[in-house]
Amino acid sequence: MDMEHLHDGDGGSISGHQSLKSTAKWASSLENLLEDPEGVQRFREFLKKEFSEENVLFWLACEDFKKTEDRKQMQEKAKEIYMTFLSNKASSQVNVEGQSRLTEKILEEPHPLMFQKLQDQIFNLMKYDSYSRFLKSDLFLKSKRPEEEEEEPPDPQTAAKRASRIYNT
Image 1 (cartoon, one colour):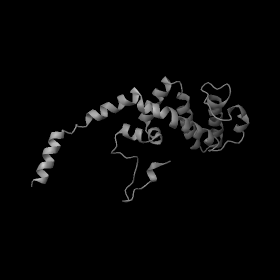
Image 2 (image 1 turned 30 degrees about the vertical axis):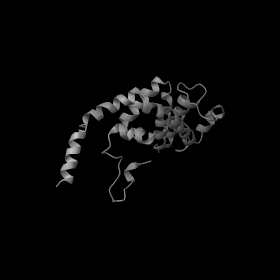
Image 3 (image 1 turned 90 degrees about the vertical axis):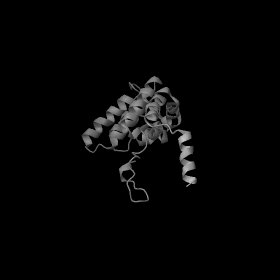
Image 4 (image 1 turned 60 degrees about the horizontal axis):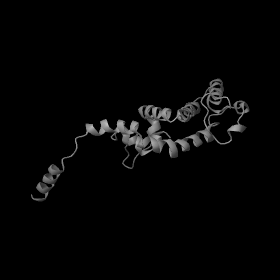
């Protein structure tokens, strides 16, 4: 979904919550993670360790494929996606329902949403499986730490003094 065209109730544009730190954005949803190039990079590193990087690579390839308008290019990309991720000889095969029934015949009439169902399956697999493990992983937590250190930790005593000054005026 294109976040650039969403608007909040005040007429301001919500373009991915710039005020939020990256890791907070990544933690809020898999969609936000996949919209951030650095988030994708970290998630790929994590999936590589889990031997399931092909899932995010397939998802990204499908996203790119949907934006392809030239028919010849679409055919080439469809074949590449099929050969890389879906065929039974695929080098980075993804595990999707009905895979054994997929044949090169699907490549005869390529259209932008031809991989949508499979992409959704892989998205859900990542969302309910790898993504939750990613948020608990050292890789994510280490990315989060430097951001938290940048912020000054509030001194509870100072906050209490400030509060007492406010109420004692």
